[in-house]
Image (cartoon, rainbow, N blue to C red; front, top):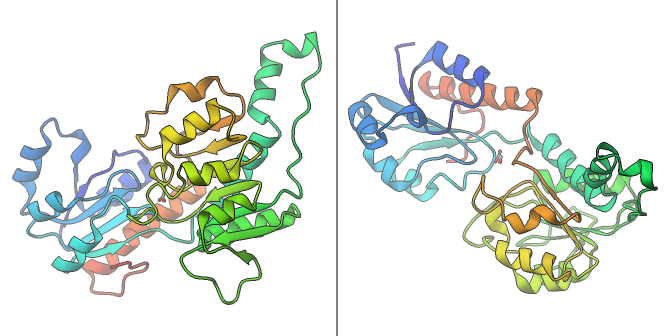
Length: 314
Ligand SMILES: O=CC(=O)O
Protein backbone atom coordinates (compact mmCIF):
# COMPACT_ATOMS: atom_id res chain seq x y z
CA UNK A 1 0.00 0.00 0.00
CA UNK A 2 1.37 3.46 -0.89
CA UNK A 3 2.05 5.75 2.05
CA UNK A 4 -1.16 7.46 2.98
CA UNK A 5 -1.33 10.53 5.20
CA UNK A 6 -3.47 10.14 8.32
CA UNK A 7 -4.18 13.02 10.69
CA UNK A 8 -4.65 12.00 14.31
CA UNK A 9 -6.83 14.61 15.99
CA UNK A 10 -6.95 12.88 19.37
CA UNK A 11 -3.96 12.81 21.72
CA UNK A 12 -1.70 9.79 21.06
CA UNK A 13 -3.08 8.16 24.21
CA UNK A 14 -2.80 4.49 23.27
CA UNK A 15 0.61 3.15 22.17
CA UNK A 16 -0.87 0.10 20.44
CA UNK A 17 -3.06 2.24 18.16
CA UNK A 18 -0.15 4.53 17.42
CA UNK A 19 2.11 1.62 16.57
CA UNK A 20 -0.46 0.04 14.25
CA UNK A 21 -1.10 3.33 12.46
CA UNK A 22 2.58 4.21 12.15
CA UNK A 23 3.31 0.79 10.65
CA UNK A 24 0.90 1.42 7.79
CA UNK A 25 0.51 5.16 7.29
CA UNK A 26 2.29 8.49 7.53
CA UNK A 27 0.85 9.76 10.77
CA UNK A 28 0.41 13.47 11.51
CA UNK A 29 -0.22 14.04 15.23
CA UNK A 30 -2.22 17.22 15.59
CA UNK A 31 -1.97 17.38 19.39
CA UNK A 32 1.84 17.44 19.22
CA UNK A 33 1.90 20.45 16.88
CA UNK A 34 2.81 23.77 18.54
CA UNK A 35 0.83 25.72 15.90
CA UNK A 36 -2.14 23.62 14.77
CA UNK A 37 -3.26 25.94 11.95
CA UNK A 38 0.19 26.01 10.44
CA UNK A 39 0.50 22.23 10.88
CA UNK A 40 -2.76 21.62 8.99
CA UNK A 41 -1.74 24.06 6.27
CA UNK A 42 1.57 22.37 5.65
CA UNK A 43 0.13 18.84 5.48
CA UNK A 44 -3.36 19.42 4.08
CA UNK A 45 -2.58 18.00 0.65
CA UNK A 46 -1.22 14.76 2.09
CA UNK A 47 -4.01 14.00 4.57
CA UNK A 48 -6.52 11.47 3.25
CA UNK A 49 -7.85 10.19 6.57
CA UNK A 50 -8.53 11.36 10.11
CA UNK A 51 -8.33 9.24 13.24
CA UNK A 52 -10.24 10.75 16.16
CA UNK A 53 -11.75 9.63 19.45
CA UNK A 54 -14.82 10.33 21.57
CA UNK A 55 -13.35 13.64 22.69
CA UNK A 56 -11.58 14.75 19.51
CA UNK A 57 -13.23 14.40 16.12
CA UNK A 58 -13.42 16.68 13.11
CA UNK A 59 -15.57 19.80 12.87
CA UNK A 60 -16.77 21.47 9.66
CA UNK A 61 -13.84 23.91 9.66
CA UNK A 62 -11.22 21.15 9.80
CA UNK A 63 -13.03 19.05 7.19
CA UNK A 64 -13.14 22.05 4.84
CA UNK A 65 -9.41 22.62 5.32
CA UNK A 66 -8.52 19.15 4.03
CA UNK A 67 -9.17 18.88 0.29
CA UNK A 68 -7.97 15.25 0.04
CA UNK A 69 -9.91 13.92 3.03
CA UNK A 70 -11.76 10.66 2.25
CA UNK A 71 -12.50 8.99 5.58
CA UNK A 72 -12.77 9.63 9.32
CA UNK A 73 -12.16 6.55 11.45
CA UNK A 74 -13.08 7.23 15.06
CA UNK A 75 -11.73 5.29 18.04
CA UNK A 76 -15.13 5.61 19.75
CA UNK A 77 -18.73 4.60 19.34
CA UNK A 78 -19.97 8.16 19.92
CA UNK A 79 -19.56 10.47 16.94
CA UNK A 80 -20.82 13.71 18.47
CA UNK A 81 -17.44 15.38 17.79
CA UNK A 82 -17.63 14.62 14.05
CA UNK A 83 -19.71 16.86 11.80
CA UNK A 84 -21.72 14.08 10.17
CA UNK A 85 -23.91 16.27 7.92
CA UNK A 86 -20.74 17.89 6.55
CA UNK A 87 -19.25 14.44 5.85
CA UNK A 88 -22.42 13.35 4.06
CA UNK A 89 -22.42 16.52 2.00
CA UNK A 90 -18.79 16.03 0.95
CA UNK A 91 -18.95 12.25 0.47
CA UNK A 92 -16.49 11.58 3.29
CA UNK A 93 -16.88 8.16 4.87
CA UNK A 94 -17.14 7.83 8.67
CA UNK A 95 -16.61 4.76 10.84
CA UNK A 96 -16.80 4.13 14.59
CA UNK A 97 -16.12 1.20 16.95
CA UNK A 98 -19.48 -0.27 18.04
CA UNK A 99 -20.11 -3.65 19.71
CA UNK A 100 -16.56 -4.34 20.92
CA UNK A 101 -17.03 -1.83 23.74
CA UNK A 102 -20.60 -2.61 24.75
CA UNK A 103 -19.73 -5.01 27.57
CA UNK A 104 -17.23 -2.68 29.19
CA UNK A 105 -19.55 0.30 29.20
CA UNK A 106 -22.48 -1.75 30.51
CA UNK A 107 -20.26 -3.31 33.19
CA UNK A 108 -19.19 0.15 34.28
CA UNK A 109 -22.81 1.37 34.48
CA UNK A 110 -23.62 -1.47 36.88
CA UNK A 111 -20.38 -0.78 38.76
CA UNK A 112 -21.46 2.85 39.22
CA UNK A 113 -24.89 1.79 40.49
CA UNK A 114 -23.28 -0.48 43.07
CA UNK A 115 -20.63 2.09 43.95
CA UNK A 116 -23.20 4.82 44.61
CA UNK A 117 -25.76 2.72 46.48
CA UNK A 118 -23.29 0.62 48.49
CA UNK A 119 -20.90 3.56 48.93
CA UNK A 120 -17.94 1.50 47.69
CA UNK A 121 -15.58 4.44 47.22
CA UNK A 122 -16.48 6.08 50.51
CA UNK A 123 -16.11 2.83 52.46
CA UNK A 124 -12.72 2.21 50.83
CA UNK A 125 -11.66 5.68 52.02
CA UNK A 126 -13.03 4.77 55.47
CA UNK A 127 -10.68 1.80 55.74
CA UNK A 128 -7.64 3.62 54.34
CA UNK A 129 -8.03 6.59 56.65
CA UNK A 130 -8.09 4.34 59.73
CA UNK A 131 -11.67 5.36 60.66
CA UNK A 132 -12.77 1.69 60.87
CA UNK A 133 -10.67 1.32 64.03
CA UNK A 134 -12.88 3.95 65.65
CA UNK A 135 -16.24 2.48 64.66
CA UNK A 136 -18.22 0.47 62.14
CA UNK A 137 -19.25 1.97 58.82
CA UNK A 138 -22.83 3.25 58.38
CA UNK A 139 -25.54 1.25 56.61
CA UNK A 140 -26.00 1.77 52.89
CA UNK A 141 -28.75 1.06 50.30
CA UNK A 142 -29.57 -2.26 48.62
CA UNK A 143 -29.11 -2.47 44.83
CA UNK A 144 -30.84 -5.78 44.03
CA UNK A 145 -34.44 -5.16 43.03
CA UNK A 146 -34.19 -1.40 42.43
CA UNK A 147 -36.11 -0.24 39.39
CA UNK A 148 -33.80 0.87 36.60
CA UNK A 149 -34.88 3.33 33.90
CA UNK A 150 -32.73 3.51 30.79
CA UNK A 151 -32.61 6.45 28.39
CA UNK A 152 -31.75 4.93 25.01
CA UNK A 153 -32.22 1.22 24.47
CA UNK A 154 -29.57 0.63 21.83
CA UNK A 155 -26.72 -1.86 22.12
CA UNK A 156 -25.34 -0.41 25.36
CA UNK A 157 -28.78 0.24 26.89
CA UNK A 158 -29.77 -3.37 26.20
CA UNK A 159 -26.55 -4.69 27.72
CA UNK A 160 -27.20 -2.64 30.87
CA UNK A 161 -30.78 -3.94 31.01
CA UNK A 162 -29.59 -7.54 30.71
CA UNK A 163 -27.13 -7.08 33.57
CA UNK A 164 -29.62 -5.23 35.78
CA UNK A 165 -32.15 -8.01 35.20
CA UNK A 166 -29.68 -10.42 36.79
CA UNK A 167 -29.97 -8.23 39.91
CA UNK A 168 -33.78 -8.64 39.76
CA UNK A 169 -34.23 -5.00 38.79
CA UNK A 170 -37.47 -4.13 36.96
CA UNK A 171 -36.43 -2.38 33.74
CA UNK A 172 -38.14 0.46 31.91
CA UNK A 173 -36.88 2.72 29.16
CA UNK A 174 -37.32 5.83 27.09
CA UNK A 175 -36.41 6.06 23.43
CA UNK A 176 -37.78 8.07 20.51
CA UNK A 177 -40.04 5.17 19.57
CA UNK A 178 -41.23 2.10 21.42
CA UNK A 179 -39.25 -1.05 20.55
CA UNK A 180 -41.46 -3.82 19.24
CA UNK A 181 -39.56 -6.87 20.35
CA UNK A 182 -38.66 -5.70 23.85
CA UNK A 183 -40.41 -6.78 27.04
CA UNK A 184 -39.37 -3.77 29.17
CA UNK A 185 -41.89 -1.05 30.02
CA UNK A 186 -41.76 1.93 27.66
CA UNK A 187 -42.32 5.54 28.70
CA UNK A 188 -42.83 8.10 25.94
CA UNK A 189 -41.16 10.86 27.96
CA UNK A 190 -37.99 11.05 30.05
CA UNK A 191 -39.89 12.81 32.87
CA UNK A 192 -42.33 9.88 33.11
CA UNK A 193 -39.44 7.41 33.05
CA UNK A 194 -37.63 9.32 35.82
CA UNK A 195 -40.79 9.51 37.94
CA UNK A 196 -41.16 5.72 37.72
CA UNK A 197 -37.66 4.44 38.44
CA UNK A 198 -35.14 4.56 41.27
CA UNK A 199 -32.02 4.55 39.13
CA UNK A 200 -31.95 6.51 35.87
CA UNK A 201 -29.19 5.63 33.38
CA UNK A 202 -28.22 7.64 30.32
CA UNK A 203 -27.19 5.34 27.47
CA UNK A 204 -28.15 7.21 24.31
CA UNK A 205 -26.05 8.99 21.71
CA UNK A 206 -25.45 12.72 22.11
CA UNK A 207 -27.31 14.68 19.44
CA UNK A 208 -28.99 18.08 19.36
CA UNK A 209 -32.18 16.32 20.54
CA UNK A 210 -30.56 14.59 23.50
CA UNK A 211 -28.40 17.53 24.72
CA UNK A 212 -29.61 18.27 28.29
CA UNK A 213 -32.12 15.43 28.04
CA UNK A 214 -31.74 15.28 31.82
CA UNK A 215 -32.83 18.75 32.91
CA UNK A 216 -34.29 20.22 36.11
CA UNK A 217 -37.71 18.69 35.48
CA UNK A 218 -36.28 15.20 34.97
CA UNK A 219 -34.03 15.52 38.03
CA UNK A 220 -36.98 16.61 40.17
CA UNK A 221 -39.03 13.69 38.86
CA UNK A 222 -36.23 11.28 39.84
CA UNK A 223 -36.26 12.88 43.26
CA UNK A 224 -34.34 12.81 46.55
CA UNK A 225 -34.12 9.01 46.67
CA UNK A 226 -33.23 8.66 42.97
CA UNK A 227 -29.80 7.94 41.54
CA UNK A 228 -28.56 9.27 38.20
CA UNK A 229 -25.95 7.30 36.24
CA UNK A 230 -24.21 8.77 33.19
CA UNK A 231 -22.02 6.64 30.95
CA UNK A 232 -23.07 8.57 27.82
CA UNK A 233 -21.75 12.10 27.34
CA UNK A 234 -21.52 15.00 29.80
CA UNK A 235 -23.83 17.32 27.84
CA UNK A 236 -26.69 14.83 28.22
CA UNK A 237 -27.16 16.40 31.66
CA UNK A 238 -27.70 20.03 32.52
CA UNK A 239 -24.69 19.88 34.84
CA UNK A 240 -25.29 23.03 36.94
CA UNK A 241 -28.86 21.81 37.54
CA UNK A 242 -27.57 18.41 38.65
CA UNK A 243 -24.97 19.98 40.95
CA UNK A 244 -27.62 22.22 42.61
CA UNK A 245 -29.98 19.26 43.00
CA UNK A 246 -27.25 17.19 44.67
CA UNK A 247 -26.20 20.06 46.95
CA UNK A 248 -29.84 20.70 47.92
CA UNK A 249 -30.55 16.95 48.39
CA UNK A 250 -33.24 17.05 45.69
CA UNK A 251 -31.36 14.18 44.01
CA UNK A 252 -30.28 11.08 45.94
CA UNK A 253 -26.95 10.41 44.27
CA UNK A 254 -25.02 10.22 41.02
CA UNK A 255 -22.49 7.96 39.33
CA UNK A 256 -20.76 9.88 36.56
CA UNK A 257 -18.17 8.75 34.02
CA UNK A 258 -18.61 11.81 31.78
CA UNK A 259 -18.84 15.58 32.24
CA UNK A 260 -19.77 18.67 30.26
CA UNK A 261 -16.25 20.12 30.13
CA UNK A 262 -13.83 17.22 30.56
CA UNK A 263 -11.41 17.00 32.30
CA UNK A 264 -12.96 19.79 34.38
CA UNK A 265 -15.41 18.47 36.96
CA UNK A 266 -17.51 20.79 39.14
CA UNK A 267 -15.54 20.93 42.39
CA UNK A 268 -18.68 21.18 44.54
CA UNK A 269 -19.12 17.46 43.76
CA UNK A 270 -15.79 16.54 45.37
CA UNK A 271 -17.15 16.75 48.90
CA UNK A 272 -20.33 14.75 48.25
CA UNK A 273 -20.14 11.12 49.37
CA UNK A 274 -23.29 10.13 47.43
CA UNK A 275 -21.49 10.88 44.18
CA UNK A 276 -18.94 8.69 42.38
CA UNK A 277 -16.77 10.42 39.80
CA UNK A 278 -14.79 8.60 37.09
CA UNK A 279 -12.44 10.06 34.44
CA UNK A 280 -14.35 8.88 31.31
CA UNK A 281 -13.15 5.28 31.45
CA UNK A 282 -16.19 3.42 30.07
CA UNK A 283 -14.15 1.63 27.40
CA UNK A 284 -10.77 1.89 29.10
CA UNK A 285 -9.68 -1.73 29.41
CA UNK A 286 -6.68 -3.19 27.61
CA UNK A 287 -8.86 -5.73 25.82
CA UNK A 288 -11.49 -3.32 24.58
CA UNK A 289 -9.17 -0.48 23.62
CA UNK A 290 -7.16 -2.99 21.53
CA UNK A 291 -10.30 -4.26 19.80
CA UNK A 292 -11.31 -0.64 19.11
CA UNK A 293 -7.86 0.14 17.69
CA UNK A 294 -8.05 -2.92 15.42
CA UNK A 295 -11.38 -1.64 14.07
CA UNK A 296 -9.96 1.85 13.48
CA UNK A 297 -7.06 0.42 11.49
CA UNK A 298 -9.23 -2.24 9.79
CA UNK A 299 -11.63 0.41 8.52
CA UNK A 300 -8.79 2.49 7.09
CA UNK A 301 -7.23 -0.55 5.43
CA UNK A 302 -10.57 -1.59 3.97
CA UNK A 303 -11.22 1.90 2.61
CA UNK A 304 -7.80 2.28 1.00
CA UNK A 305 -7.99 -1.17 -0.58
CA UNK A 306 -11.49 -0.52 -1.94
CA UNK A 307 -13.09 -3.14 0.28
CA UNK A 308 -16.35 -2.72 2.25
CA UNK A 309 -15.87 -0.80 5.51
CA UNK A 310 -16.12 -2.91 8.67
CA UNK A 311 -18.29 -0.52 10.69
CA UNK A 312 -19.54 2.30 8.46
CA UNK A 313 -21.77 5.08 9.78
CA UNK A 314 -21.63 7.41 6.77
O1 LIG B 1 -16.70 7.59 24.91
C1 LIG B 1 -16.40 6.62 24.30
C2 LIG B 1 -16.93 6.24 23.03
O2 LIG B 1 -17.75 6.97 22.44
O3 LIG B 1 -16.53 5.18 22.54
